[in-house]
Amino acid sequence: MLAEMHIRVWTPHSDTTDRTQAAPNKPAKASAPSVTPTASFSDATAPRPPGEALPDHPVRVATLGWAALQSAVQQCQSCALGQSRQQAIWGQPVQAHDTPHADWVVVLPPPSADEDAQGLPMVGEPGQLLDNILAAVGLQREGLGALGQSVFLTPAVKCAPPQARNPQAPELDMCAPYLARQIALLQPRVIVAMGLVAAQAVLRHDAASIANLPLGRLRAQLWQHHGIPVVVTYPSAYLLRNPADKAKSWADWCMARSLAAALTG
Image 1 (spheres, one colour):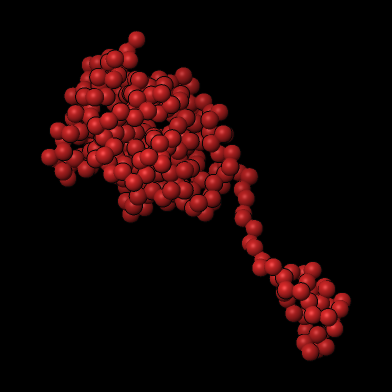
Image 2 (cartoon, rainbow, N blue to C red):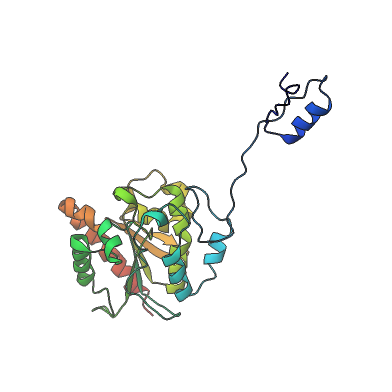
């Protein structure tokens, strides 16, 4: 009746409409439910909905040198955190050359709002506590400490999640290649993962075995990241709230120091 009135009726599939108009006396077959195609982005820095990642993202990041990697992190808009952050937190010390090295890599929890504002990892009281721990094991943020060894601090996720929430799985997935490439270029003797998010980011190859383990079950044992020993310990902010666990944390750092000393060559 609507056709006789010259009123066009829209349907999801134009081919079904054409068949119906061409043979009005025959019932049209029921069409399959329409599926909205997934959006694709050719630009690696284009923002995308949480959960949508570029298939070649890890491969592309794995080819970057130090300076190019730092630039990619600072410009990254690959997940929702890129829209809410003030700046990406690359790490410390900032090394401008393309042949970096660090004897230790300390992987930190996601940045806080204060770190986001200052553009540096581990500021405020948690940062002061970490500096004290580093000094106690013979390290310091800039240059060589008493051990004669260098350290690089970097967060597991480079952008601060809003409202201090935990990063979501797609956000961890997008940042993981950056962390992996930092470690691959630095070639440290030992990695210290501070907190559960840091441990999950470093130990992605053991994801199935650590998926449901609390932080307390991950520490006090030796893990590996591509052959590099990994020690898991408590983050500074946790220790400020739970000072009774500082002794456990100190034992973890002593274990890391022993590993680094044993691998000194």
